[in-house]
Structure formats: C-alpha cells, structure tokens
Length: 192
Image (cartoon, rainbow, N blue to C red; front, side, top):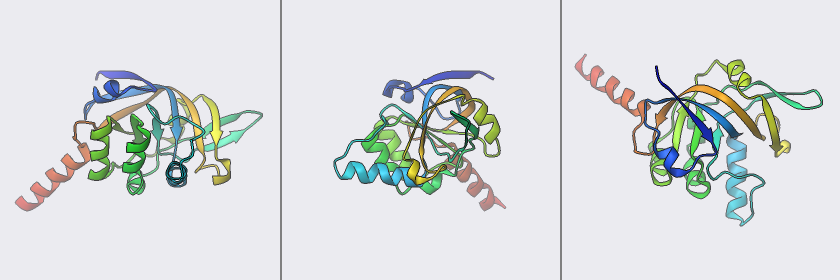
C-alpha cells in the first residue's frame, strides 16, 4: 500500500490533487472543531468579526479531544466525532473560510461535497475507536481557543506527526466513497 504524506496547511492545488481512495498521513498543523466551534465561527464572521485562528488552508478535525494539563496541555485521546452532525454548518464554513481538509468519521452530505468541490477541500476519514492512536500522532498543543465552550468544544490548535492513516473519502472532484457504497448497497438490495 502506497501512503502519501501531506503537510498542513495546504494550498488549493494540493487539496485538489487528493483523490477518493488515496491513503494519506498528515503532518503539520490542525484545528479541532465540533458543533459549538462551527457555530461560533459562523456567528463571528456573519457579524463582521475576525477569528483568533486561521482556517484558510487548514486541516479541521471533527474531534472533541480529552486533554490533560500538567504544566502544559497534552492530548490523551482524540477520536473523531461523527461528521454528519456538522452538515448544517459545514457548507457555509467551507465557503467562507476555505479549509483544505476536513477530518472525521462517517462522511458528510451532498451539500457539503458541493461546497468542497467549489473551494478545493477534501474529507479524510479516520477510524472510530482509535482515539489513543490519534493522540500519539498529536504530540504538541500549539494553542487553545474558546475554552469557555468546554474541553471537547474548544478549538485546539495541534501539531500532527504522521497522523493517520487517513482515507480520502470525499474529494474536490465530487467523488464520495460513502455515496458509492450506498449506491452499491441499493443496487444489490433491488436484486434480492
């Protein structure tokens, strides 16, 4: 198996070079963001305010990590959350902020895929149940934003080292492995 190494932040051409089915590892920076963080990002931008972190070119990990503070923050567990729960906010966030990678589990909607096509963004699937493995690939906390949201909802700015393996499950060319599997299942169930 050929695993491609990518580094974040990415530019649009790098994100568009990723194809559904590719296996990658990620090094560089990533930001965690779940429901409350997505909502706050959009509220601030709609009100004309700036964000305290950069999302353009970023890797956004749908994750509510468990952290420990022993003089410094350390990631204890960092499994992905179900990305579909962010579908109501993701298309607008993608169009406004231009992240290049979304990372999570379970895939996202066709509306989110359409925004990814427009902007040049890919969705990388990380397996559920591997939270400790993920934490081992996140050796440094660079910053934390919006701690008032609570540990899982705060935006954690992390450094990744060979985070993965990740499967490019949705790409900027409109391909979704999740949709392809769903279509295959539907076709087979009709034949039964």
